[in-house]
Structure formats: structure tokens, C-alpha cells
Length: 577
Image 1 (spheres, one colour):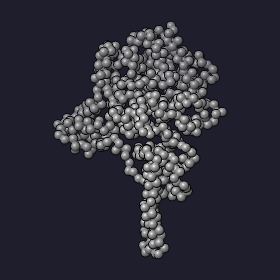
Image 2 (cartoon, rainbow, N blue to C red):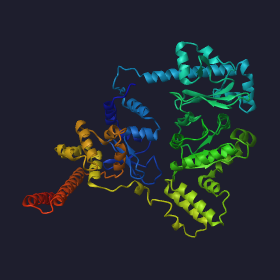
Image 3 (cartoon, rainbow, N blue to C red):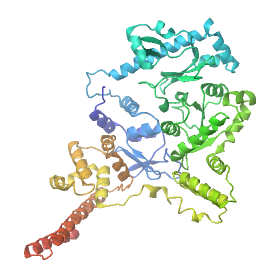
Image 4 (cartoon, rainbow, N blue to C red):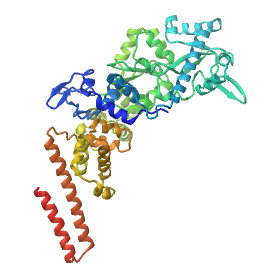
């Protein structure tokens, strides 16, 4: 696989005007040595989003969001890492340089071939649908309420009853290999036949609008009723959602509705309810939740009005708990018995369905209603059951104010006049910033200052002695590693350092340390603080050495006493200077 050169990425960050890049999306104002703006990643009234062009680095003092040019494009524009590099290359008018330029990107070529064969298969399915053999399928879709225009708009097709319809149309050695890799044919005991037969076909597309798989709805009473493509090199159903490609680049989406079926999705779209996606499996997955919360702040689950739908709603609630907070929430639309979004919107009309969306059940209402089912709150043991179940779930929520409100609701349900008794059971941090606070030490300050000001490395003449003891002192290993990286890359800035550590194990530690936000303006103050931390750090090492001498020698001899005096003098002199 052809890899983008790390040096190219480092230089790309260096030549990018971060202020210009960010100013295209949000308004920035110059303030002293920095540029500031209202943070695009959380709601605020006073600007706390700070950009430093020299360091190629932005940081929000409100929500602790930070990064370089690539991070901004990934977080704000919702681009992938590779897409961000391509975007920056276009902006700066440079061509991407690869580590091994002569090696063809075989993976990309191979995937393109798989996408192409899927596109051709879809064309065949569409042709089948509008042929004489597809009349039954067309009638079925129209009976379900889909218009001819909608059927064409979503590229619906039909797989014939014949077992070799696909094979007969793509019967070459190369195509058979591609059909195997896409899962469109099955090979058993030297027999080859089509995976999908006598089914209405729904093409599944990725965010780049490439067909990566199919969903097929059977036209007779055979099982399974619905069949999806298997997992392949291009299709992972837990990382995709039907119709997501239509929303991925949208801005300011208030909510996204999740439905179970393809026709549910298409019918809502036909009725101008546009912010909707459909699951490709029975239950929602973690990756899909994160994906949706990157696009919107509200996810509304709208499953079928049956036992399976209610189970899926409860499962979705529990699955979403680690991802909801004061800004991200989930809601639920509970449909009448044995109704689904498809049939209900046709029966009630768009106005009534929109009312259902507006009156969707909140997370807290569903949570308490579900857990309180069959509980008698006049019974002390049922109160205990409620408390245990609710507290266990509330404790997993990250939102501070959401936790407080849920705690208050619980106290009312339990008949408590004061909810302070519950705060010992439900852990709530007072401030969001305090959740990320860690104890500041000399070593942590040294690393943070060095990350923000790589030029400080010049104040350390030699790291050989530090290299010898780095395994014995926590954090020194990373400090020495940073010094080595900076010394090898002259004029490196914070943004470039972040890029070097993006996929390294120590990236997590660096993220935590950067949240200490020292960020001083005055170069002399920065140097003074850095040197003060180094002196304090070295003094601690000397003190440890003194203690070691005392512990190892109960009756100190003249030699040991002289050594202690010498070490104490070093500490004294350093404190004077």
C-alpha cells in the first residue's frame, strides 16, 4: 500500500496558514499574539477558542478541544485523515508525496474494481426490475406506497429467480474473482450460484456514494425475509448506515431519525422527512452512534411498534449512555401496536408524523418508565431495585447537568425531600474542566512547555545523563524522547509534533498534558518557568540521592557526610539562582 510521506505531512502543516484555514469556516479576531473565536465545537458566549499560527496549533480553554490543521478539518469538516491531507494539498497547491512513489496503490485499485462491479450489478438489477420479469416486484413496491419516481431515485432493483443471473452477465475469470470478494456469488461443492434470488434489491452506499453492498427483500414466503451482503473488503454493516451518505456533508442538522427498514427510510424521504437513516442490522453499534453524534446533537430512534421494536429501543438507550451528555441527547418515537414508520406516515400523513417527531419521548422519561415497570414504589424493596438499576446507568453518563437532573427525578420518585443523599452514589464532578485535571508535577510541566514551545530544547545542552536515568523516573522517558524528536527536526512546531505522535502510544499522555494549558505569551517567562521546573526536578533527584545515602549508611562516615554536604550545596545554589 502506498503511504503518504511523514516528512510531506510535517511540511504540509508547516506551510499551511492555520488562521486562513480556520477563518474560512469561523470568524477569528486578532488578540495580542493570538487569534480568538467562539469555539465551533461547543456553545459559548465569550471566545475561548485560541489559534497560534506560529505553533500551528489551536486550543479551546472552554472544552479543551485542540489540534493542528489536519485535526480541524477532521473535527469540523468531518473529513478523514487522508481526505484532510488531500484538502490541505489542494489549498497549498502541492502534490502529495508518497514514501514509495513507484509502488502503485494496489489496495485503492482493488477497491475501485470492487466498486465498479457492484455498480454494474446494480445496473443489471435495475434493468431486471423494469423488465417483464420484474412486474411483480414493481407492483409490490407501488402497493407499499412508493412512487415510480422514488423507485428510480433510490436505484431499486430486482434479482431474478434464476440462480445464475449475475454469473451469466459477468462470466469472466477476473469478474468471478471480484464477485466472490463482494459476496455476490456463493461457491459450494464446485457449484456457483447468485447470493440474491427473487428479491427487491436496495443498493447500500458509503459516504462517497459508492455501492458497497446490497439489501434484498424476498418476494415470496421464503426466509430470511431480508438478506444483506456479507462482510467484505468494502462492506462493514456495523460501520455504515443506509442513507448516511446523504447526510455526511450536511451542516447544522438538528436531529437524525433512525428506522429499522429500507422501505421505512425511503417512505420517510418520499414524504420530505430528510434527516433519516436505517440500520443495516438488528441493533445499533458503538461506531454508528459516534458517527451520528459527529453530524447531529439529537438522535431519535423510531422502531416498529412491536415487541422487537421495544426491545431495540431499550437496547439503543443503554448503548448510547456512554455517548450522551449535556449537549448530545437521544429521543424515542413509540409507534402504535404493529405499526411501522412506513405504514403510519401513509395512514396519518406528514403533519401528524411530524407531531410525533416533535413530541418524541425524552431519554429520562423512557429510562424511568422502563425501569419502573411492574415496580410498586410504596414497597421499600421495589424502591431499592429502582435505585440500584437507575444509579448504575446514571453513573455512566458524562453530562454534568444531565446527571443532576436525573438524580433529582430519582429523588422525587423515591420520595426524598433532599437529593443530597444520592450524590454519594452518583458520582458527579463539579466542573467539566476538573474531570480532566491531573496533578501538576515538574516533569509534566516540563513536557507541556516543551510541546507548546519546542525551541526550549536548546536550553538543555546534553541529554546523555538524562538518558541514563530515564527508566527510573516517571515521565522522563517521554521527555527525552521529545527532545530527541525536536533535535532531529529543526524548527519543528507544536502542530507538527502532534502529527508525529498521532498514532503513537504516548499520544494519549500528550493529549492529557496539553490540557494543562500553560500557554504563556512572554518568551522570557516561558524560559524562566521551564528552567525553574528543570531545577526543581533535578533538586528532587538530588534529595532522593541524599535519602538513599542516609538509608544505606546508618552510621555515616566522613566520606558520606561530605557527599551529602556537596549535594545540599548544589540544591542551595540552584535555589539562589
